[in-house]
Amino acid sequence: METRVASMSIIVSNLESVEKLNALLHGVSEYIIGRMGIPYREKGIYIISIAIDAPQDTISEVSGKIGRLDGVSIKTAYSNVIG
Image 1: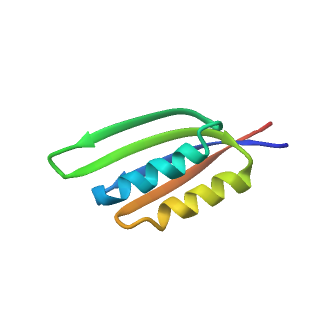
Image 2: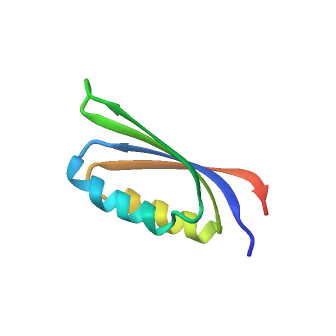
């Protein structure tokens, strides 16, 4: 199965969506290379970066689900590395 390496940048402005976000990320935890979360308390947001190596369909699916959460925005950048 071919996989792609990608970076997901997530900004959370609605804390009520955090539980659903974490559940979605847990569902693909086998593919996550690393995760970093930064609370920006002055602005009331959280910035999360995810490095992932997964099938492109999986990355697209989870990105779409995350993007549909209330108060959550996501951008995904794909590398040219396919394995």
